[in-house]
Amino acid sequence: MRQNSGSIIFAALLFTAAPAQAFDSPINRGPLADFLNVFREQAIPRQAVTWRHPQFKRGTVVISTKDRRLYYVLGDGRAIEYGVGVGRMGFTWSGVKTISRKREWPDWSPPPQMLKRRPDLPRHMAGGMENPLGARALYLGSSQYRIHGSNEPDTIGAAVSSGCIRMTNKDVVDLYGRVKVGTKVVVLN
Image (cartoon, rainbow, N blue to C red; front, side):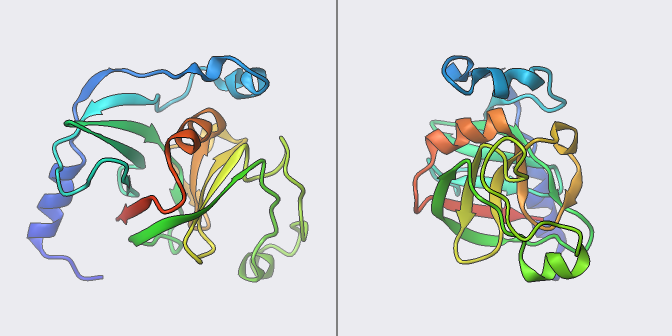
């Protein structure tokens, strides 16, 4: 995709969100609490931020693959910022999708392209704590991409996936509770 300097400046301005306050949610209770709280200290903590981009309406998910951040727009000049892991070199993408399905503890079957690169992978894994999709998955349209949890919190903030957007399990459970099927997802490079 060819970009002009105006779109580069827009992207730079878009992701200079100022922290508004520390953010937490009631995920510290319930059956997943121990599993989700294993990684209390994360490199990119979830927080509420000031949001100065009215072109993205309340309820929209905006992902900056360059900055490795996901924003859930709250409206009234606020958003929730999450750290994410993104596609590695050659596996980046951008565009607009919608959340087509939501799954708790999803099963995982690697796509054929991934099995071709990694024949050592299992053909199918049932959902659970060892599953690479983690605690929740948000499917993006009819694509093979998802926003999903990860059991590897050290990959958050890195470019390591085959195009999916990774979050800590704690953060993906929080986002999962906020979004609905049909939510607009904007992915920017």
